[in-house]
Image 1 (cartoon, protein in one colour):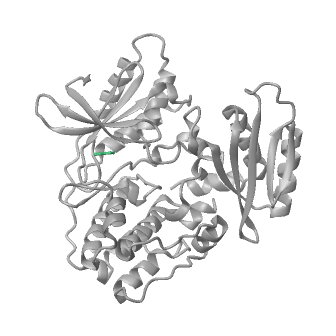
Image 2 (image 1 turned 30 degrees about the horizontal axis):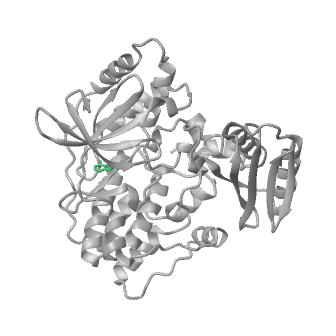
Image 3 (image 1 turned 135 degrees about the horizontal axis):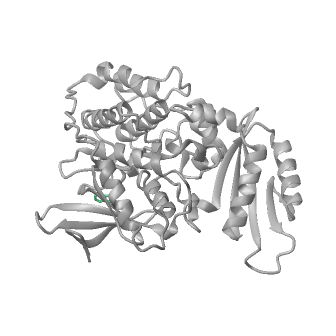
Length: 428
Ligand code: ADE
């Protein structure tokens, strides 16, 4: 298949939003990866100007350790992100198959990671979902971070208390993000870098447990066992980055000044910046995709919103009609477990659902589900983080996605940590 000057080839990966395909520029023979987003799978949000700015920012990110976004193309039904082609696979895969790295090797990758992260932070872009799966390796074994750009998320979209709490693996997530206590993108990203450093040097996760409540506790307390066989310098650095208090957690500047970190450190030299020409280019893509008269600018806006995000941000539930990650939603609350279970019961009963209790879980089914389109069955579970903070997990077993979304929104509106607090705290 052809896409302008690109010839599309095999599938490289399949994310939540769509496929990533190999592409070759037929003129130059150069290889690219093209992320293909289906417009129709995207819901409506009216944030075009902000998103265009965000994509503009993403396209200005030119760092040797950040996957480049070269251009954005659009057809009637799809949006194409032309990305740098990275051939070394995921860092995660390497650790899984070869185990932990030598300290010197791990340090080199961690230096590249910090370099890339600090470059993006300096441009006001925060990842917020750093984990080995979106840390790729190039042919020379150097780090390439993909999917920087959750910052494209508009503020008002974060206020619902659901968006940044969808269930991905929480293993890499900073405690203050989990707790919805308010966080700065920079410190939250550094926590994830600390988790990645641990995985690089030790070969397994610092915080892990099959029981989610236990896992939350460990993260929340920064309860990490750092093996004694690591060098004192590495142990000291890990401990200071995996500090559950974001206010006293090590900063990028402090990491760069750390003795263990500094060994053999050669900062990368980012490419020169271009001017803002990309905004025009984006406008052009917008027009192109809008030519058939059926698709409103609105739809395209949504597509552009996605571009600023990524396939691995676990946000798909909010955009796709039906997606695995949408079935499970998590939010935090200050109500006690007993209060929460009672209030959930009251709210859902008021909404016309019937509640069954079993083993501390609530099962919610619709009372008058004559048609399958209307039927809904969900399970609710509450985990204690500390005596004044709880996590509520809602899981849909089956039923209508829109109805489920409404129910989730209502529950988190009534029971979630108050949104004004989130509003203050999520602004980086
Ligand atoms: N899979 C996802 N993104 C990729 C990229 N940029 N290069 C190669 N494979 C990928």
